[in-house]
Image (cartoon, protein in one colour):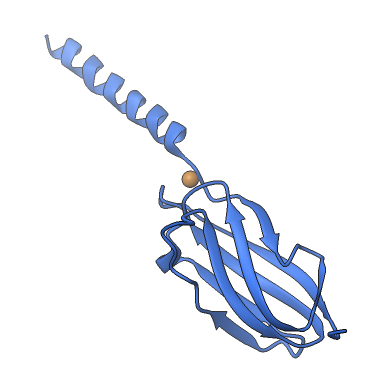
Amino acid sequence: MRRCRRFVILSLAVAAAVASVGASAHAVLLDSTPKAHGALPAGHTQVVLKYNSKIDQARSRLVLVAPDHSETTLAITADGDKPNELDSTADLKPGNYTLHWQALALDGHLTRGDLPFTVTAAP
Ligand SMILES: [Cu+2]
């Protein structure tokens, strides 16, 4: 009887472990504006990062590193209609930028990445 109960508990533990692996959906960046290593003209710009899963927009983070290496935290637009996106805007001058992103997926896993891009003089 006791041995049987131990087996049940072990089975539940294995099932829980398998379920948590199956439920994992870390945020993977699928597409972005600006594109990584891309170029775009100076000016007021929409920043859009699209992921493979829903993102906790309130607890994710976008930090823009300007050509002079100053860092600005971008306000993320809360948008329930686009739960897979982190959207913002930025005023960009010519030069080389990096966007640091941190995305919190709904499974509680945080992923991060760097998106380098170049801003050219507006035509
Ligand atoms: Cu995950």
